Amino acid sequence: MRFATYTANEDTFYGAATDDGMIALSPEFPQWPSLYDVVAAEALDQLAAAAQGRQVTHTEFIYEMVMPNARRILCVGVNFPDRNAEYKDGSAQPKYMSLFPRFASGFTGHERNLVRPPENHTLDYEGEVAIVIGKKGRRIPQEQAYDYIAALTLCNEGTIRDWVRHAKFNVTQGKNWDNSGAIGPWLVPFTDASQLDDARVVTRVNGEVRQDDTLNRMMFPIRREIEYISTFMTLQPGDIIVTGTPTGAGARFDPPKYLKPGDVVEVEVEGIGTLRNGIEDEVV
Image (cartoon, rainbow, N blue to C red; front, top):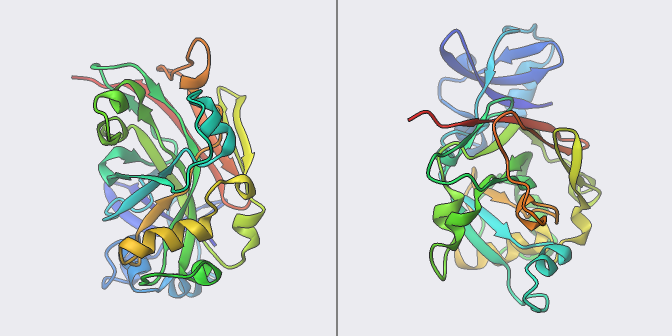
C-alpha cells in the first residue's frame, strides 16, 4: 500500500496510489486533514483498510510533497564513509553525526520541477531514504528504534552548494531554498526491518548513475540515528528524518556537475519506488 498527497481539479487530496491512479481517501476522514495528521493519529492502517476493494477516483492529478505540512524535518549529513572521504580534509570517521533542519517549503513533489534560483546556480542533488516517525518517543534504545517508524519515503535533498559555505557553523541557508528538493512520491508503511536493512539507494541524472550504495554501509545506521536524535528531543509522530546520501553528488566531480534546466533526477529504492524531478529556473 502506498499513500500520496496530490492535487486534482484544483483540490488537494490524500489517498492510495495505485498503478491505475489515485483512490481519494481524505473525504472519508475529515478528522485528519492531511497525511501528517493521519500519521500523528497512528492511523495508516485505517487508510489501508479503507482503500481495500475501492475503485480509482482520479487518473489525472499532480503529486504534492507527500507531507506538505510536516512540522519537523531533520537531516543527517555526511553519513557514508566515502562521503566523508570526499571532503579531502583528512578527517577520520566522526564520533557523532552531523544534523541540520530543513523545512517543508524547501520541497516539492514527485514529477515536479526543482527550482534553480537566479542568485546562484550550484543546485545539487542528494538521493536519500527518509523515515517518518510513527509514535512519540524519548531516549529510544537502538534495539527498539524500528518500532517507532511508521513509513518510508524518498528524498532528493537538493542543495545550493555555494550557500552552505556562507557561514562557519551552519548549512541551513543552502539547504532551504524554496522547492529546491523533493520528498515522495508516497509513503510506504514500514512493516519489516528488511525494508531498510537491505535497501540500496540509486540516484540517476539524465539516466546516468551518479549515486549507488546500500544503507548497511552508513556510518550512523538508522537505529543509531533514532537513538541519538531522541536523546535530545522527543520524537513525535509525523517527524521526518532524512537519513543520509551516498557519495557521488555533483559538487564532488571535477569539474562539478550541477543541475541545470532540462535535467531529470531520479532517486530509486526497490520496495519504496522512484522519485523523479526535472529542473527549471525560477521566474522572478
